[in-house]
Image 1 (cartoon, rainbow, N blue to C red):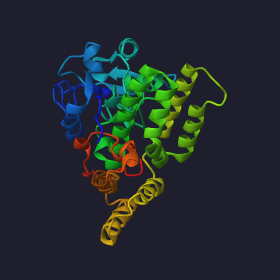
Image 2 (image 1 turned 180 degrees about the vertical axis):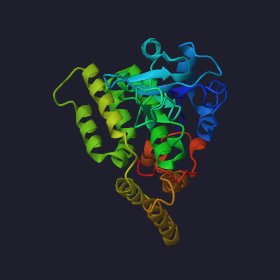
Image 3 (image 1 turned 60 degrees about the vertical axis):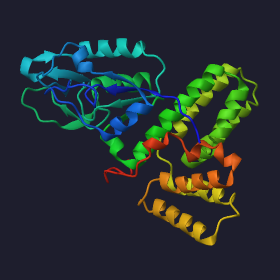
Image 4 (image 1 turned 120 degrees about the vertical axis):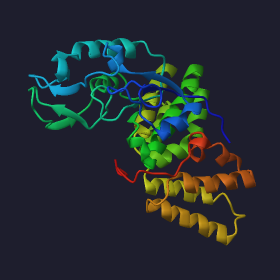
Length: 322
């Protein structure tokens, strides 16, 4: 029903792009492989960029004397912190507008979370977890841009949320380029049910921003909306709000047979119980939209927030509540 422009995503180069892991390996990711035709990936390996070779002696995150994380290579007794921080600053400062980051899990440079943090002693064992140094710079500079790792995206709820975020933000890029209030109203209208499913309070706040009763300049309205949009989509859609949206959609189809309605309601219960992803009941409604030519629902991004080829129901079974 919709056409999608490719979002720009910064990705760790070792994930499906190049043999640049510390041991010369490449990381296989079915998710990244599936995304390649639909995404403008910008691969980077921060460790190679600062001069570490392939293969290389591994580096680790250590807690400095002041408690700040540092990037240390035990085999050569070398501190690479300054080099990594300098590269991160130069690289991130020179980026075009991007819609997301997809980084290597648990990497001392790229890991977003669960990175082992060692004490600042030669033989110490890790005592806590944190983030890699490049990932820390990403979080500081791009707090409103989606950031995930390839491991977490094996979870279907996190994957659906991430894909929804990056493709919605890619559409936002085009709307912001137009910059008119009319374009903003159309964007908000198209995403109303999607926002309602993810965060109804935020959806209403965004509606007030669009209404602009205070008469703020368009640029301020756009900036406020962009900040609120990231927050609205920050967490997976709740089962209850999403079900409410789908039940609301059911009311648009008086022509359905009772058996069809029963089948759909059962899919909602399966979604509520976590047995299927949100894409299953939404796909049923999408088929009705086409069948009955329901124009209003056809315009709602909730029913196809990202390309159909990326819809998968596979799941790791881990971290469903993250």
